[in-house]
Length: 453
Ligand code: UD1
Ligand code: MG
Image 1 (cartoon, rainbow, N blue to C red):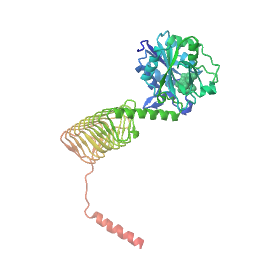
Image 2 (cartoon, rainbow, N blue to C red):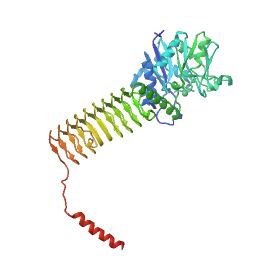
Image 3 (cartoon, protein in one colour):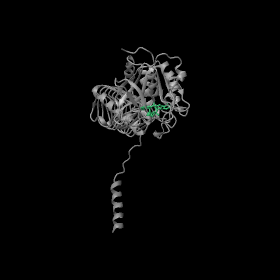
Image 4 (cartoon, protein in one colour):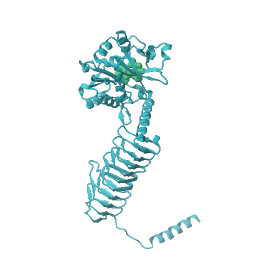
């Protein structure tokens, strides 16, 4: 039966994350192009949380600013001193006010936990007052162990440092995610002490206290890879690998062709239609959407780009934010495109930079064409009309407009608008000096021969 109580989520994000060796607070490090903190916030939002409170430390103003920008001032609670996870949840007490629904506590350093995990945990509330998400650990070192009675009910959680050898042999561990009635959980949290190996107020002690007060406690199992907690760069890399593995699997399942899946990297929001073909060694930064039938060739890097049906991109192409390719556009090798709209059938096949540009239907951009869009202070637009033909190695000095059907001569520097249907040539005129090369060869050759003799 679905749980109908309203939900508050407290996300614990205090603590320095010193093992990351970073100036950036741990929870702002990214997995799949999204910060770990945002993964937690979005999971809470998708789980339908009526209230989300992030507990941050006083020494991480970046975390506070991030939370306020995303969720508003009321969503931030500060834990003055990191005295433990129970103490951290209590820092959110004022923000929770007299909230009467379920309280779910989760950690901001577990970037693979999703709304579905929260939902599974809440389903456990049908038969229990408190539910903890556990997992079977391949290596339980460092985790809290879940103590179950013979009926499988949860009796308590023992932190590794406080565990007896027999308890350490338990491999069912605490993920850190827990849910229970808000008011009751806050009452129990106030009774948690710190007489333990770390001298900390443990959130996990709530379970033993709940049991002692007659409450029923249960465990719901999650897969170990879903609850991976990140405390180091190496665990961050593991989380990224797990994210990528899942993203590749879901792309394949959705009908995308990946020639060598292990070499393709996705972002949290990469959206690829069925029957798109992706060659090896392609990286998708945030904000990429690709329509059916497009082909992304090897060694391309795409970010903030919309790719229309039937486009071909790469090999070795770079699409930067603000790029939008209509149907059947071709972007070839060593072409960089930024903040540029390419109309249907337009092509830039080789060695170009197109920045702040609007390219008309079927226009052809010759090899080596560069938009000179930046004067050191501001960016300027280049407008290229339909069926225009930009000769190889043209420099388009923006702001500038090339009319429909116009040609530019190869090697031109175009500084003025080109009328529709015209040819613009802006380069030095060729001069031929008859016989010069033969005379030069004869003279220089004779000089060298005399010297070598
Ligand atoms: C915690 C659990 C352990 C579980 C493990 C899963 C407790 C006592 N132990 O251990 O059972 O197996 O996570 O990864 O809860 N935090 C604060 N303020 C504090 C202390 C921590 O906000 O005063 C935050 C941290 O930023 C982190 C989370 O709470 O996001 C967990 O804290 P951490 O110190 O990493 O706990 P573990 O020892 O890993
Ligand atoms: Mg931890």
